[in-house]
Length: 416
Image (tube, rainbow, N blue to C red; front, side, top):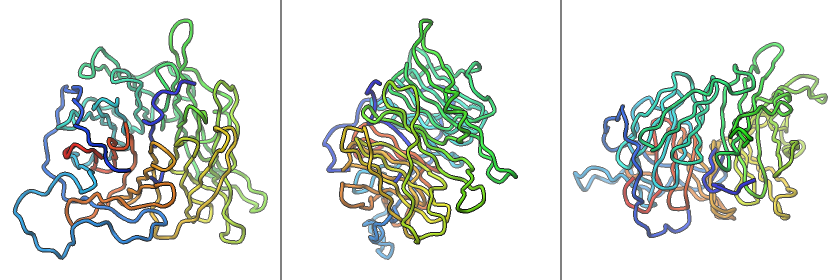
């Protein structure tokens, strides 16, 4: 497998000293539908990360009187710069080309591009939308409830957005996550969950784009799709291969009933089959149902895999898999979370000791290899209370966090 863009991966809990570098020259994404500037945001801030136990971030004290009539700054003291996102845009995925051009999609179907000043509306899919990923600034793939959309063209400002009408697999199953190493090695997965039905059931779709004699084409991994796991995310790395995770209603003999169970599988480089990765349960006797029920995000950083989710007992926890043999085998550990800890929805990082987590109620936290530390996002006294759903980065001093009506750029430039 090609090793391209490991540090630019997505979708769950998760920067050293900033690199003193100027803001990169941005490629143009100008097109029809430029969005109006809404003015500086006032609802920025931070909350406790999982297990941190620290007080609310070191932003301004709400009791301190105003000492200036100037507009609030756009960036926090740690370089988290806030951009203006129109009301109603619940951003669920973000991807960039590493040269300053950044794309995001909203759950309602809008495709937005950041050109350094504005978020510009470039396309509307017309359906629920879940993911965006690209192999370059002119080769983007978007996952929707009806399948895939391909954005392509000679330049980023003249991209054409075409639905992929001949993609294999069950067309009624949404594509919820996309990841790849290049234009000829892309995975797109999704699932339909009917967990409240009687009996409960799920459906899945797994697509792989590879190079053929006639050019790159999508094929269906029918073997993996036949597991009926409703896949929620796909990710990977050069050393550990491709990973997928999702949920399926399983019969648990010890409980004598069918219940949702989270499943993780891995396919190593050049293999043709997938291997199930059992997640360790909670310690015996601590909860009623110790198996993982739902995983909400995951990522591989170096030779370490991070996942966060919920047990069948509704208790929360984090699973960490560590490899000491270059990704051949993994040793797993489960860390329970307290009832007040926020779930992480996405992880991103550059190394096992440089990991970021974003998630519930403004969760942004950094792991330095030994402890989690809360990030200072706020530029005023009001903390963020909005969910943060995805994170993507080029390096430790240049990454983006998006969520409900919010997009934050960590940068050393002093402006978004």
